[in-house]
Length: 498
Image (cartoon, rainbow, N blue to C red):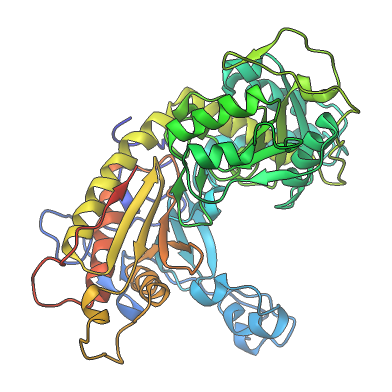
């Protein structure tokens, strides 16, 4: 899907295309040949379009800073936040941005600066900020007078969401799927899936796949003839929090065969990878595997909190005699029904409406295929960065879920005199790249066990022109941070994982 994937942009301005309610800015980096429009430098070297500053009044004749402790203006928020909220909130420290408007890929802060947002709410914004189809779906519910909170009761909005969700599932699961809505908290769907597997099998241990991906590890998950198998095996097809690590397709197929042979439910956590993010609607589709349970959250709510567990009806206490998944009988022991997943705020009506609109738009506009195409282009460009800059150790990912791992160049470890002004660890390098990106009007996230992986999660509606702008700004940031200034390629070539 080339060109603009977002009809809400006015005039096709690329990475800085603005909604009609926002002024337009010129694309690209300052001084790049062949780019049109006027540009100016904002504070901290951020290259900005011509945007009116946002002035917030907090009372007649009083500035926001004079408004006292009850002021809710935007510009003073960064100063107030440390005194009001826990220090456990790390995002405001790493990304000192106070967003006041957003559309698609573009975020505008309280000072009028604009940024390209490649964090997408850690993957929750499949269609970017305030996509028209999402806003329209929310407005329809608000205008209808329907209840906003239905405590899990069946409503037309919920029925529409489930109908659309079933359309997107792998066919072998969709025909036998049961959907359980959970509370929107991060652990709620995980707890529900684990309780479901334990209740259905009558067993307790659940194995979580976090390490090496090879046959021996698959066998270790479900050992044959060595006592009772586990209640389930849980994995993420792409482990985002671990640094965007992709489970190999062949290994996943082996694991699916072994778990099916030994009547162990396979649970796929698609919290971050779902709804087209990896270049397939669900990441397990890359391997051709159909799991017994899918954990869904983030993108399925269309930017609002929503979580659900989809599972094969063989796990629901119903008798299923002849069903087969991936050619293997699902012979789960029939015990009690699984956990209800009850939670006060499950199935929020606005989130269900926004989620149904998002799933439908991703499916109808073939945005998963679009993500696969642009993701390949991003990986190719990052491969060039890895060859050019010594601090880029590895790039990897799938679709529009991409990680760039930073590590000290080999020269920093072989007796080269230390430079106190430069970062020396992978996490310091990644944090420095994130800061440099922010100075250039680009928001990126950090992940990995030590925070040494720069993660790109642009919305699925990102255009080719916007992708070029993101890559240009990221390349500038890496160049500014890279320790090697001798003009030569690094002594190693960083591998690229797909």
